[in-house]
Image 1 (cartoon, rainbow, N blue to C red):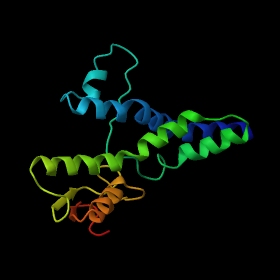
Image 2 (cartoon, rainbow, N blue to C red; image 1 turned 45 degrees about the vertical axis):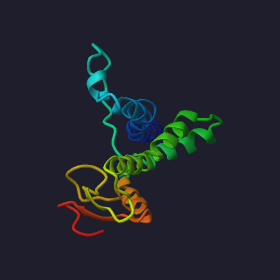
Image 3 (cartoon, one colour; image 1 turned 60 degrees about the vertical axis):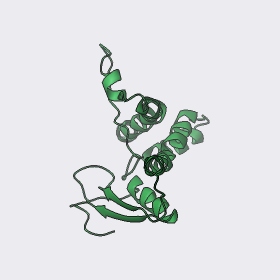
Length: 164
């Protein structure tokens, strides 16, 4: 039974870890690089004739599994004497996405000769993914807090999250 439990545990951790690494190494860096050209990472990757697995980049990682399950796996692997550097590198990249989004907002305001301080900003959606009411580790919360620290007047709308 121990083998079955270990196998089940590995399967439960594997999917979030693959997602975190896929976004950290491929999805998010390419989304940033492609943003200036107007192309999309998903559009470019989907032209590959085989082995296509889409990772949809967003403002960061949230929820109950993506931010934490890879860390658990990393800890377990370190206990076995290995260094799972890919997980750490991916986490480093993914954790900077809320800051990147805040910079995009500041740049968009600057392009219109507006400052973040005093700007009225509406954030649409605060759950960690669409169509749920769960805000656990939502990157939207980090983005809202950072914009407020910069002096923006931030409101949000999410029909599934009536209050924060």
